[in-house]
Length: 280
Image (cartoon, rainbow, N blue to C red):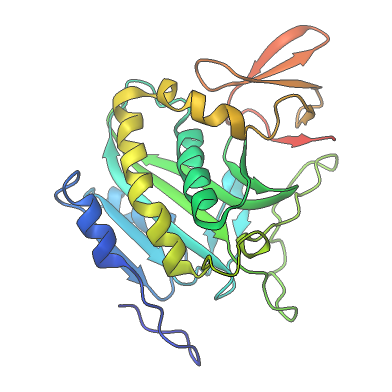
């Protein structure tokens, strides 16, 4: 059990429950809860570079230097979010679509828990309404088809106190024409009978996430494409790409690339090339 935040009651994390669920699939699996760390992704990447590649779920009650995609920062004031990283060796035939498979798993679990209509915004965000509910950051250590994958997740649970302000530079660098998306919180949609505390949300998502990541390793993106389609927040909407192009989002390719109808025809946009924001 992690030490409690000063002045707050200790959180009761379902570490044993998660371990019992996952260990039949991953015998060396462990669950760690830390009261504070710079970044759970950074810590697992440090361990991997030191040769520690055992499967682990690392949960941070508070991150002082959380990271998002494209070098942006993820700030999590205590009590407002759930942040964790899942690290495990993976050897899929094709890595394309892993972040979206993670998004599918999380969206389904969060929707079941809260009743919220959680959507997925290509390539690695969850949306609630028109706001960003969660972000996913995947990093790997090693080369070749078999690598140690670190899957970082940050989920907004409750709106931060009005007195809290993110550190300067929290939004990271975005092109001037690509404004940051406003945040959303699970508490906005959860019913009075659906808890939105971090331990309860972790218990709801962790087992299914490990199961789905292992399924992705076996079956690839094709196993998740039908589950993604009804939660695709961009399909049928005009989108603007960070390189200045714009067009109509038309779903994903068989390799999980974003298909965009432009004046030059259907173009495929691959993760890492661009950021995407809906214009309408």
